[in-house]
Image 1 (cartoon, one colour):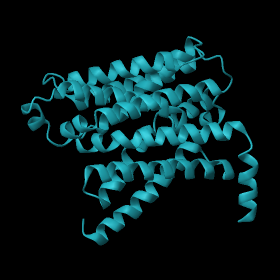
Image 2 (image 1 turned 60 degrees about the vertical axis):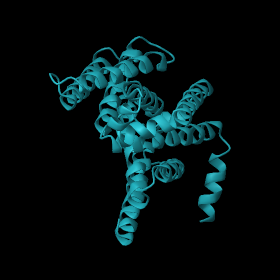
Image 3 (image 1 turned 45 degrees about the vertical axis):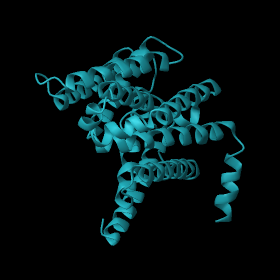
Image 4 (image 1 turned 90 degrees about the vertical axis):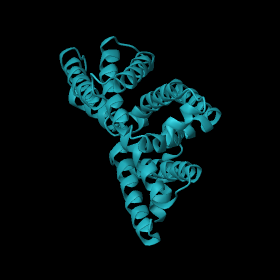
Length: 281
């Protein structure tokens, strides 16, 4: 045990480890906030689809040799989120079919671009890093950290300011609309925030696993609590704990960062599920 502590103290001397912990904590916290809303509104599939679109946008940004890839990935993902919300309300194009089409299409196009136009000698490694976040969280520059901090603060402020509206739209959209709440506007806000979370979360767990970071803490909290505010708070605690624990385990034992964090979320979900069964929820 003492050897692990000494090793951890050694790694914590490096700035890239501190950067990773800061960014990981912020991403985990932001992801958990809207995860509850996505689960309750059955919008979980949107997060999965947007993560694949973000991968395609990442490939295009890499092709354009864009240093700050967020400049391209963020608007593309947000626009896609808006379009998914609109088409999901269109009876001619079913929302789930559109998400499936975009997911597969974006993955295929992104992988093709990275293979045909990539100048890297390790294309498979680059693809693995983008999809599963294997090492990218440990190679963040100070500018990337500040970009993540900025968008995380924006997400937290938006959620805090519009908490009551998001709560109303989440639980009873028809009643909220009847009372004068512009539900379309707040559904759009939710989609935009989710898009932002997915983009800043790609460096932590990769584009394929980011939806797990959004969904698992919410499901875990819902097994124990029934109150919306309690679920959101506990979801945030679970998400931050699993992210920090997963990153530390990854650093100490050289395991993939994204996979380690998601496995930690799965273990916590299993524990919460058992606790929920004992409580009779």
